[in-house]
Image 1 (cartoon, rainbow, N blue to C red):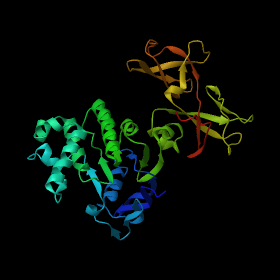
Image 2: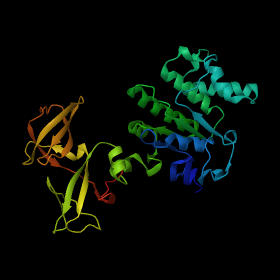
Image 3: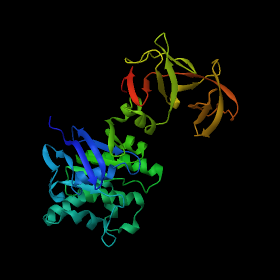
Length: 360
């Protein structure tokens, strides 16, 4: 099967600084992906290169097998059939909803243009607001207009540059879910840029985590969470701590909380120092447990408390517990580890991941 979108060994520079280094990933079908990472990691630069606004210094970009960019040559943006939905939306304030959507359809026959706009108005649920102006719409409605305008010319791929960042958290996730549904119904592929992992989880089938211009991992949200490729991904995705441990003479990993049930991966020998990724949901509050730790902090989350627990060594753990377990800082509570999937790191490199749970 020909990959849908393929980036191969991509380097992009703003001389004298190289901002993208050896990035490679593939979307194998016209699905929905996301480039995720902190500010300044190169997400938008990659998006601009795919759109045709940034030249590449090394590597190539292909869409459905056709080359879009290589060193010294770029297919012009207008010939790529790639749509863009910007962070600031860039709606024309003097045009109605209908005219904003129709803007990208210049050159279409009038009847075809009217039919396409009518279809999109129905698709995004704005038929009754067709003659309003952008300032008369809510933020979410403006987002839908921008989406309809970007989809109007039937692009093969829609690029979305943090389009939901100005919205509150609840509306952002709801709209990301709605935009995903609209893209699927329209049959368009999408690639989102975001710094919000929950938005990425809601929106994308596959996610690429970027750090300082390098792609650390391209995978599903499930595998990013349970099988992070390195420390950066483990720290950036979800919450958790790295619990120190050491491989003993018996070949098992010894920690402050006792001997872990998972065996160390191949390559570890007695005396090796390791770190074990422990998520809040791996730590079970159990009053009957002989293992007692001190509550350092607590954060009320409605149905749950997120406890920060202090071990005797000063190391910290995070623990989620039902909110009827209300323990103030300074109290000692019982805990036990319940880890189905062990992720261990050693001295600046990943050792391995073992015992992956079945994908739900």
